[in-house]
Length: 156
Image (cartoon, rainbow, N blue to C red; front, side):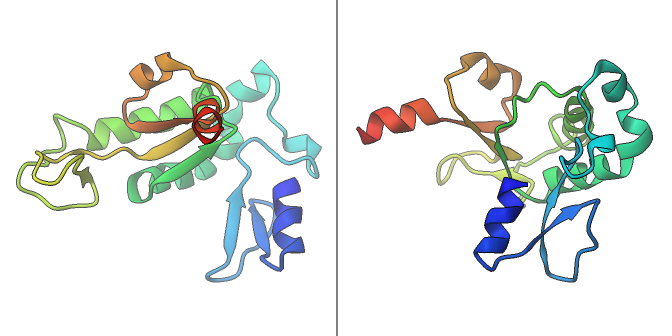
């Protein structure tokens, strides 16, 4: 809720889904694991994680669509959520090799690392991490990793 409060204070209202009805072209934040203002919805325990699909399947669909159509920014997210793993695996299965042939195709589903290089399946997001966790790059080759410690050292 600090993020929503900051947005409202700066005259940039943001709607918290699924708790508020958004207006067309409005900005929104997706509360997959609940909200402090709705404690009955907060996902904290193993049992709540196991029942996640029962109550939040449609919200996972929003994430899945965003992973396919947008480049997502993950802030304060450990990438250890089992439900996110399911969504990401479904997306990878549908859009990564051998299913996606980028050769000779200019598409948002492909990206070029360098001009003239062979197109590669695109990365679907960027993770801002407080500390260096090199194993994440091996586990998540389809995400860009930005380590905040490294940014601090460069700017010092």
